[in-house]
Length: 539
Image (cartoon, rainbow, N blue to C red; front, side, top):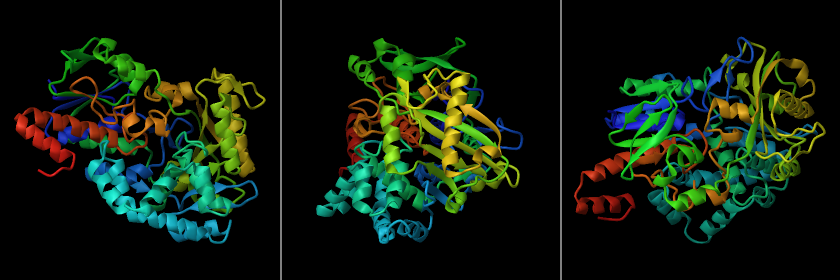
């Protein structure tokens, strides 16, 4: 009997399993798909010789993550590569905002939009530099992050701290208007906010856009050499070196609960696998509380709250094999790994408003990835392996374009939407479509079929909006990996701190399970002292 069963071999499940194995636990990981990785996988399915990431591609949060750094995945074959520039946001008139790991290069790009905006960016970067360690400490530890938050509060005390807090909860449109005279800095912040489902007018989108921008400024948007699955391969290699077992093609049908405690799982094949100490679930919240755990084993309030759970936007993705480099109108975009395609902040607002109204956007804001530019191993010399993804409503109530897309996402609608995405690229790179050797379309149902956690194509485990973060994530009153069922821990992006490949939800779940096991062996007085230590109080 293993000490722990981990449901799901996405990055969070693999991180959790590794940490439990590090502590000497016997671990078995069960994965529904035929291969591990969740949303961190690649293949050569678009064209021979072209490597395409199926889901995620660029990993600033992985580069910043103390969880992954401590695992020394480089010892297990992982290597990182960077594009010459981190990110570019071109405009239709040829101007282009550039985010570079050299802050002076970024500043010079923004000064081209409005003199003085480079200095404004440097001021924002100085704030990041001053508080980066404490911000990351708060981000990557369980909620509430008592020690990191206390350190941060101490450093922020006084009027300066309140002003910074105000800035970070601003909508990104307002934050950009307060900080920059020209469009360049506003574009970088707003485009990065829409890496999540945060519209330019959403509260807190300024802080998210600033965080993503500063992560890129400091760590870049690196990619694993050879394909995103190289990160998964390193986690799996490390896990197996510690004696853990990984089984793919094994769908867990239910969590077995006895006397209010998780004691194992039952697979779709009918096997009952007991867990001596814990069950950790790298699955979505609706899958856990709406399927794997029987309703009678959950409080009524959790089931009621689950009905209010909000997904992030649905995702539509196109992969391409290109016969040459993308012919960007702006030369600055050619060296960027990631390119944001929207002609100004107003177009970003228009895009987000159309989704809010249930309409398929007619000019879809697209994140465009130039993978060979970032990692030359991804395709033959002189070609480019590329992709773009955009967002669409979960519940389509109309089409803002002229094709009448209904959201059925049948073969015809997939091709119509892919054509629409290509036309968006053509606006900024005339001649792009003539370079397409082959393409692959991944509509929301396709993404879900490839990874059940990506319900309806939602890639972040739930909205990043303030009403579903911190103590509200995944439902009010939680914010931690513990669940209402003893011995069952939520280890997915649905838990704090949310989406992004950084391993924190998995690490938090593993540490919670280990801590619970240690506490079970202590006397009542010892447990009280241990809890006081955990919350940062003195003995």
